[in-house]
Length: 259
Image 1 (cartoon, rainbow, N blue to C red):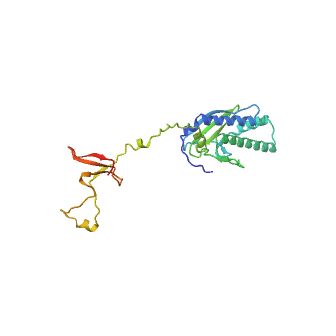
Image 2 (cartoon, helix red, strand yellow):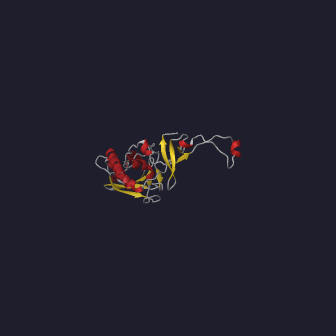
Image 3 (tube, rainbow, N blue to C red):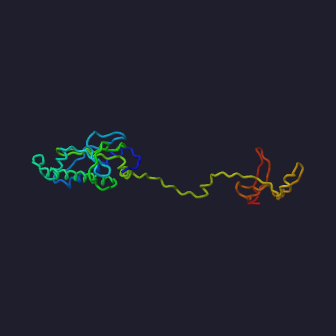
């Protein structure tokens, strides 16, 4: 299975929510298989991309999680499950086959419990565990050390497999509510260019081409009407005005609401 790549600081994967989920899965698994033993989570360590956990025999039973456990520790787990000291018994080949199948079933169930607790995509158990020397896939992740009397094991969880779980644990950012603003306030700071028009005239293109100095053009406004104030983008005047001269330029004094 190929996992999509999402970014998340690897340190996030080693925080309390992940630890608590793994520990809860271990307790649930122990209660299902043993009558008087339980596994304890002793260490959670983060690995950056391209960092690899200690070399060992890593087995992947489910989708992503890999387990590393020595044969002696695996035998101890089977002894607890059967409530019998297997190291002191004379086992026939058939007995050993049954015990091997039991051990595989126990590890497969542990892998399933862990992946469910971490919200990892479910998949049918493998017919045979996959042996790998890259339990984190080269993209970083975390390992958890577990132990009990006379046994120890490690769990490897690739970072990409628990990105969705970690993201759900992140606090939701609180956004400051936006105050509604009235339309006239929102557009009040926009600038509009005004122009003063003395008037206009419609002439033909032929007359336009024949215009020369000294020709007279009659406009559609009277001199006493004054210029019309027009805002950019608007066809109709917004006011009439009286024009006078000031120190810094011409001055327009509004006279009416329109022309």
